Image (cartoon, rainbow, N blue to C red):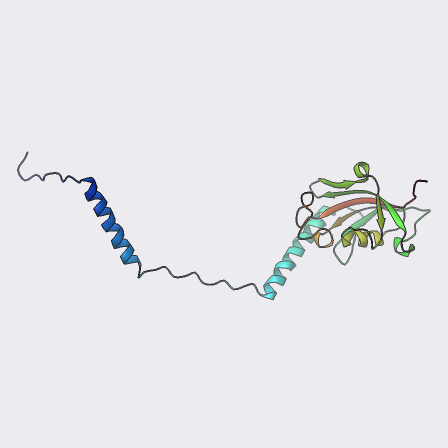
Length: 193
């Protein structure tokens, strides 16, 4: 060995454990007084914030429906945001549905789907739907749409979530906040004898 050279220090297993424990105790004792500050409390959104959020969401949905119906020739928009177009009006039986006697059952030849094309219900697979205005268990948008039509009309429409299945949807077929696409023809229900 050369003179002036240091001898290597041998560390035994118990010595390395002791040094590790000593290091951890120094860190814990030194950090106890230097605790990180609590994050600032988040305030609940105000009524104004919620109104702005819902207004933006409504504008977004309206833009989506407008884009989907841009190619429609004579689309009508209701006060609740439903957009529809009469594709065919009967020349013989064009009676406004709203003027029909209460309790009259209509027969709907329908196709109800999502914007991505997934079918929810169709008369070709489920048969025609019996519909009584203000009594059938469908969302309010369907009642509003049918009330605006005439007997024998063939229409297509886009119903916003607020007038369809809304925030909850109807799992698993209809997701939350789904815009509903509707094609239907309204006829009088005639029972089979």
